[in-house]
Length: 248
Image (cartoon, rainbow, N blue to C red; front, side, top):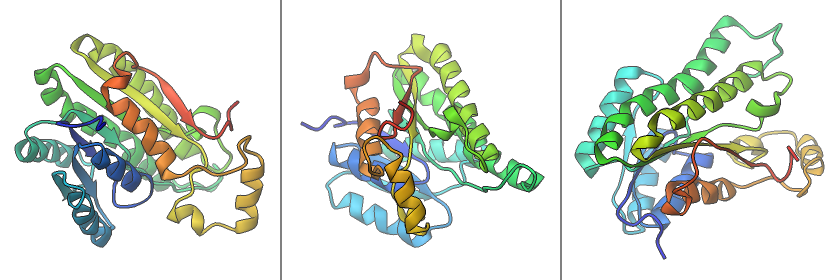
C-alpha cells in the first residue's frame, strides 16, 4: 500500500543525510517529490535521477530557503510544475557550534537565518496553496537539543526551540482549514556528518542511549511518512522525538 499516492511533497535540504532519506521514503510511497539543495549541487542532481527511477515525478531546485523571495519563488515554481503541494518538510539546517563566550554575532545570526527563518519563509509561502485546497501537512525538523539544550550549541538549540513554538502556533492558526503542523525532534542520527566524528566519542554517546545505538535517516523518514500521510489526520501541534529513548 502506497500511503502518499497522488500527493506532492516539498522537502528542503534533501541532497544528503536525513533530507535524502526523507525524499527516498516519500517516493517509495508514491509521492511526487520536489526538493531543494544549495551547496551540494552534484548530489542534488543525482538524487533527481534516483527518485525518478522509482517511477514518480521528481525535481530538484537550487534554492536558499532562508531568503524570503527565493522561498516564495520556489513554492510558485513547484505549484506550477506539480499542480499543488500537499506536504512541506522544512529540513534545511546548519550548525555553528561553540561555547557562548566564543560564538560570534555572525555565527548566531547565520544559524537563526538558516534554521529558523527558513521555516517561517517556506511555511508562509506554502500557506496559500494549502489554504486554497483546504488541506496540508507541514513537518518541521527540530532536535532533541531544542528541548533539553546542549552545551556548545546555544545558537542551534535556540533555533530548534523556536521551531517548536512557531509550529505549535501555526497548528492553532491553520487547524480549522485542515492544515496540520508537527515537529520531528531527532536525537543522534548517523549520517555523513557524524561519520567524521571521533569514533570513541560516538561510542560513548551510543552507550548513553537506552536503545544503545544511533538512529538512521530511515528512522526519521518513517515518522515523516506517517505525519505526511492520512494515517496522522488527527495529529497536529505535536513534537515527536526520534531519539532511542534519550529523553526518557
